[in-house]
Image 1 (spheres, rainbow, N blue to C red):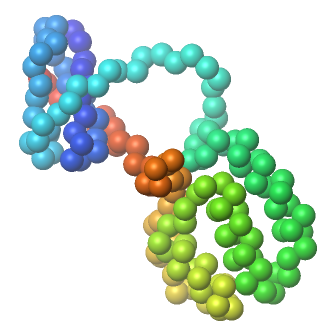
Image 2 (cartoon, one colour):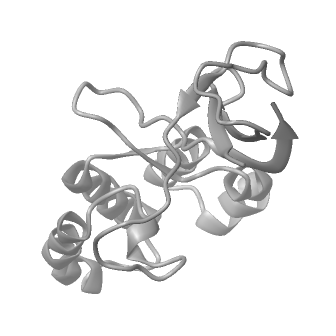
Length: 160
């Protein structure tokens, strides 16, 4: 008995549907918003290198670009004055420019405040909750748009 995957663009979620028969044409409604679902090919195997969970493969940038940027900034990072928030902010700006990563809104505000010379500890105390709940980086695509968030996977098995 097959299990089919369907994607809801509105909910950005992939749902699993169990069918008592092989059914290639039926399209159920979204369990959340009752909208249209689009059938997806289920992934069942993968060829390539394995990656560790929470490892470099989870970053929104390829490892060689990251290593290149870190190498170029390593000497500069060793020589910054830790008492000057402007220098740390400048280093972060250079890093984002070299990698093509875009700062989240909260991180952008924190960096702007550091560039203005504010104390990083004060910024963290005032913005800690915002920064904690935000993905600090987003990779921009070639067209300048932010990469769309990967779909959520609803683990419930619905009946078709």
